[in-house]
Length: 177
Ligand code: HQG
Image (cartoon, rainbow, N blue to C red):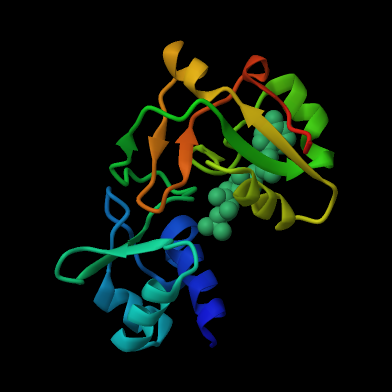
């Protein structure tokens, strides 16, 4: 498997389906490195390469590299000890036109994941939208106002902003000037 396929498979195992390789995550989302190596049939050098070269720094080892976890993006219920933070004034969310009607009615929902994922800049939100086929739609979220109203925001180790729900009153469609 090339490094990108390995990375995708590791995301699947560490975020969604550890059972694919017959392993379990602990309450904080950690998997045993030895079990990952055995389950994925790779050596430590390959795993270290996947972690180090990952474009979004999706994975983290513990201090002695006996455990590994995904920094964000989970659907399995684990607590990755996210840092609660004061968000910037504005955050962005990228999606596609097909979701826009439902989003306008119900707000941004976490769907299958534990949180709604938000980006600090428009460029990143555009990349998130571009993962799907369809016309990109970018939302501008008044995050600081939400925070002031009592909504909690978290930032993952790799810089992704997370919150539980964004009601429609706090965003509008972003149009490039
Ligand atoms: C949409 C990737 C209908 C939402 C990215 C999105 C991100 C609604 C989809 C991270 C809705 C969920 C997460 C509503 C939200 N009605 N659709 N009310 N509310 N949606 O994949 O944000 O590369 O779970 O807009 O870069 O696309 O994997 O979330 O289109 O950071 O590390 O429902 O995944 O990171 O899709 O992506 P997802 P996302 P990685």
